[in-house]
Amino acid sequence: MRRNAAIWTAAVVSAALMTGSVTAGEAAAASKTLVVATNGDDSAPGTLAHPLKTIQKAVDLATPGDVITVRGGTYALTDNITIATSGTASQPITLSAYQGERVVVDGEQLPAGHTPVGGSIPRAERGTIHQEASYWHIFGLEIVNGPYGLYCDGCNGNVFSHLSTHDNYESGFQLQGASSNNQILNLDSYLNRDPRKNGESADGLALKEGSGTGNVVRGARLWNNVDDGFDSWKFASPILIENSVAYGNGFNRWNFPDFAGDGNGFKLGGGTPAPAVGHMVRGSVAFKNAAHGFTDNGNPGALALTHDSAYANAGTGFDADVSGGTATLTANLSVADGRAASLGSATVSKSNSWDLGGTWNASSVLSTDPTPLTGPRAADGSLPSAPQFLVPRGGANIGARF
Image 1 (cartoon, rainbow, N blue to C red):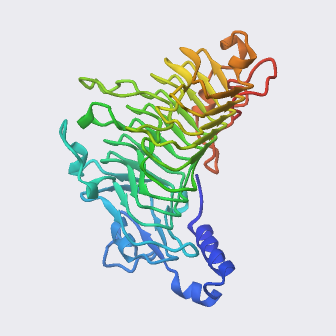
Image 2: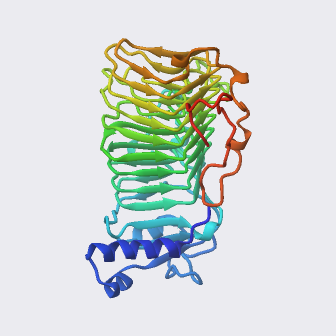
Image 3: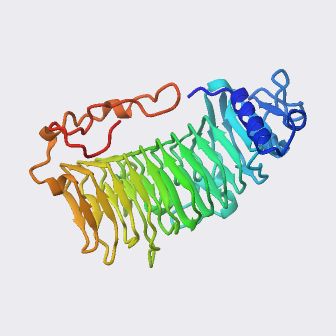
């Protein structure tokens, strides 16, 4: 998970120069690096020798092209970090851990995280990091114990990479509103729960209640969250999900009364009515979730699920049976799910395990052991290799590969 702030600075300047928007001299003069450390001082200049103390102070000082680099340690908040200033397409603002040091942003003391049952979280208090801004690169942070981990509303052109969002009192990462062209890369989001709703809405990753094209999720692992791994409820524009993993979601690990967690791996729609939208899921796997592996959740749009795998989900591996739904399922694999697939009259199903026939169980694949896939990430933040997990013994070119 190591990426040097200097690398990102160079990339930002290069992008600006390629667009011709600034000269090399102007870029060097305009951009600055702000350093934050737990032993800093917010009246300091924000250099490596004399760092700032709070991330919020650095965020308030940052302008397009700037880099905020945060030294290792735990930053316990009494007010959430609010990002309201945007970068530009050629000069994004960068917020990162300093040279791969472990940075924990802890929202335990934020009062909104302890909202009582039936209560609501005011919009401005949603998120340990609350963002309403565009063109940021945020990477390498661990965000915990907040009222949502990272909450972004009306955000465009951002890159969120190598983040860990866990043990939050709502969804680990939520993007909503009019939000386009965001990339969520190599996210780990787990053990998020919502005591105020008894498990009804805390997902690992939620892109919901909004619209905007060009949003991409790649390399995510979403596990042991109280509701769903991934949720796109009422998001009205296509989302691309690739090479991602959702498992163990929807179980009442917190002994909530009147438990309301859903427990899907990938929930690909929803609402009353659910918008018709063609989300795409490629090369991804859902296993051992309390409900379905992949579900349209009432979305009648042209979903496209290709080379995905479902294993040992309590419900259906691939649930695409909404009335009037036009999903296309191609080369997917279901092993030992409660039911392999549930398809509507207009669903196109081709070259999937259930189309090939036969019994698909643990003996049909090289391995059902997910341990390699759930282990430490590679040095560059990518998913670990799991070359045998859910790979058909007979050589059929179906399902995901890791």
